[in-house]
Amino acid sequence: MGDRVKCLSIVQLSSCHILFTEFLNKIYEEQFKNELISLIPNLTKLTLSPHDYQKFHTSNGTWFCSIDSTKTAVLILTSSSYPIASTVRLQKEVLGEIQKIPRYFDPQTINLKEICKTNFYNLLKNYDTNPEYNDNMGETQKNVEQIQVQMEKNIKKMVDNTDQLKNVGHKTHKMNEMATRFKDKAWEIKNNMWKEKHRQTLVIVGILVTIIIIFFFMIRSIT
Image 1 (cartoon, rainbow, N blue to C red):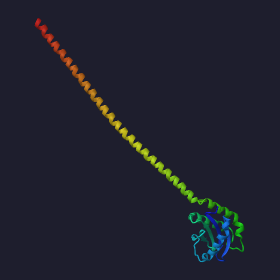
Image 2 (image 1 turned 120 degrees about the vertical axis):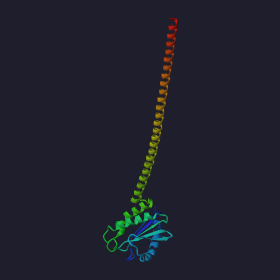
Image 3 (image 1 turned 30 degrees about the horizontal axis):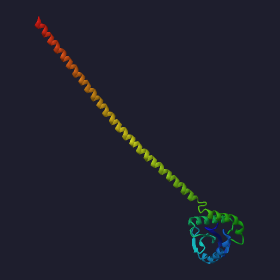
Image 4 (image 1 turned 60 degrees about the vertical axis):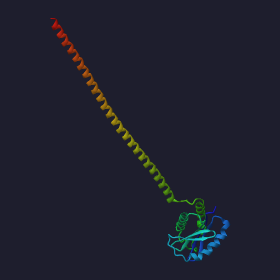
């Protein structure tokens, strides 16, 4: 524990007074504290807006510093590979918590070490364990990505259904054409059959008339 988020410190830059310091790994407490003290002179020269931050790369990792309007600096020491977005989010949470305390920036009035120790230790531990801790934007982004994936699936399904409908329409058109051709063929066959029947009838009638005529002349010749 404490390999990624190592130290949190709150410093009043006007008086160079360390208001609060917390270490996740107590083994390196003295080492980190000495490095912090050596950084403070550089911090007093910074002119950061409340939404800006400054990074200091050291042998122990990276110090992130943000300063509020009361010249109170929040410093967080992390490993060099720790996500910047997570560190900035952690700084904002720390500032949000201490700004709830009246005159938090005055060491003569408030003892932040007693008020914030447990809360900030747990906060550091949570961020050390999970860099995405309290990442509402990250959670929202995940939800957006999930919705986007689902929408893409729905669109693909809709396109597939449209293609299937086109295929069905095409098949229906072909079946209609086949039915029309079959109907025309059936009518043609029926017409041919009628013509053939009519021709046969005419032939039979012709034969009968011929026989009657022959028979008539035969009878007449006898008489």
